[in-house]
Image 1 (tube, helix red, strand yellow):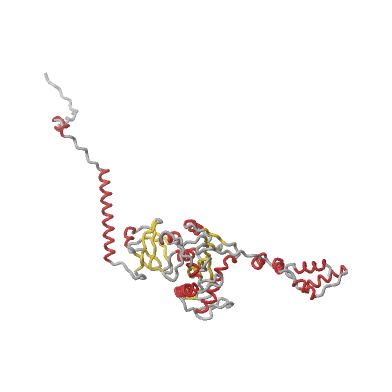
Image 2 (image 1 turned 180 degrees about the vertical axis):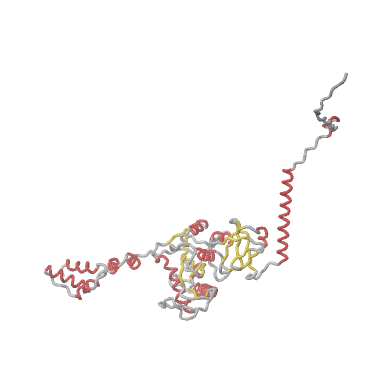
Length: 420
């Protein structure tokens, strides 16, 4: 076969849209007849087209993203130590649950994953679209110490790696990372391969945990669950927590060859921590709610929150921040400063007695009366000054006497005449 005919067949096969083998064979046969060459058979043309480079075919027949995702080399980022790099991402779970109104809904999951150990640093499960609040809650859990002793991971990362979601690219997230000295890096838009490790964890959740739960949605079932939803949001949160801390963290990871918890703890290092939980809340939980302190406390979500500190702030505007998974208490901030933790007596085990409340009222009343008397004394001193006393030796007898002026006689208009 002449080289020109071979290149012609290959060029015809690389056109867009992709032609069929029969079309390429007929077009090549016409050109061969015009040039006096032997027309190629269908089998020969098929072998020539089948021998073309698959990357070349992908680049010729599809968008550049198809070639990039399938044939370009990938640089795998491997961190050398725990907390060097965290990955953050969201996914919609293949399970149906019931919300507070009893409706069947499909929840979302946000995960913060340590790149070195593959340990889950924090997570949050929620209903509705991903938002900066959910990301902040997951980061708060990831950074601070957990109450579960079997989940010891914590600290601030050196780098936070995420996609280009609005919650990750917000000015607030950039400010939080700057305040905590964390470098924020975003993946290339439309290129999910840089987040392959966290995507693999999502696959583990989808294939191992979710099929065991009521309301599971099998692949290709068009979003329909095979069984009725049987879990609430808190039930799903508990199931995810048990799977992560009891199962996933303690089994050998195929890539690292170590359990995630063991790999995170192996070097006996001390993580970098924020100064306090209150400071962390002030940085992260900025999707806050303004509230007014009423005489009976702060009202939010149909609940009433009270703390004795609020007695001095009745009528003031405050900002509250809270964890939607635990509404027993809220954190109250006044003018950007942490004020107190207010408790809801309906949800919390502890409550404030009437005696304590009355004592707080009386204490506040005494403080206000003391300030009021001080202010009044100052006003009286400035508005009505006391005259200075005159020294006794400076008083003379003439000055000491008070002489009353003689009254003046009124002038008369009557004329008087004297007789001689």
